[in-house]
Length: 362
Image 1 (cartoon, one colour):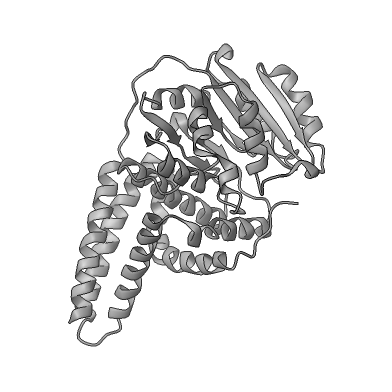
Image 2 (spheres, one colour):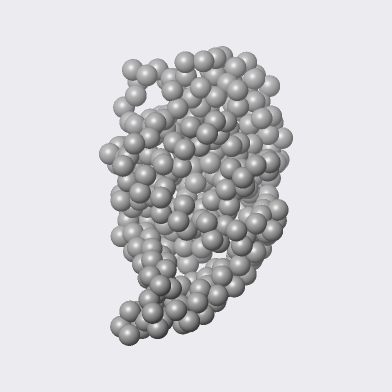
């Protein structure tokens, strides 16, 4: 009986969160604000096969060229990434290239490249994306409008291109869930996650926080841990910047091995996250495990089945809304399948991430 009462309490809290998620994920537009200076930063390592679409999209930016600069960082590439960028940016106003060698590395992962560029940047705001992404024309304008006087960081979303195959379908659903976990906590005033492919922040706030040197102990998680650092050390709001005009488009890793390393690396951050993020993680885990357990407990099967049915219906309604909010309507027809298979997959990948056994790109 105690387990059933506990399950009912967890279910009530979970259902409330799911319903509130559906309520929060509604289109909203920030008021137009005076344009301010942005420094766009892209760290690139061995991206010669993927960086051209990004450069092409940056040429189409609808933002005053006098109020932006674009800083590429060749982060010790062993291919011709640096030479390719150097050639292409001759026709990209305000763009320049910083070259780093492996011997220049003082911080792990992309932190070294990003920090180097930030220290040389001139912008009031830093906007970050990845070399394998492409940005919409209104990207900087939308980010600019997201920043009110009291805001210190704007979190964005990145969509994944539609391809055939179950693996691409899984990656797009996983990306949808990541968007929910970024947007909803931020909308509730407690940001717990972010994506480095699309975020912006005040340069002054970055310097006050200590920036990436404060996070040198973390091999990955440049985005999530920087967001947590801002939340802890900087007075101001961290907003989610939604709307199709702000979403960047990212490319899927080209090999199954790259995808696996990416998934494990993403989940390796778990044990290093802040207490609120850990509480949410363990709450979700406890609810799902207890519900699964009660489905096989004699005498409680019917109540558990009722809760399971309610869970599926409410999740479906919230996910349907999320598909529209995150510009992924093609996922709607696959929602019931992923409602079944995604939770156990997440548990497996989380356990794999705890091992810390992953590789960065060469």
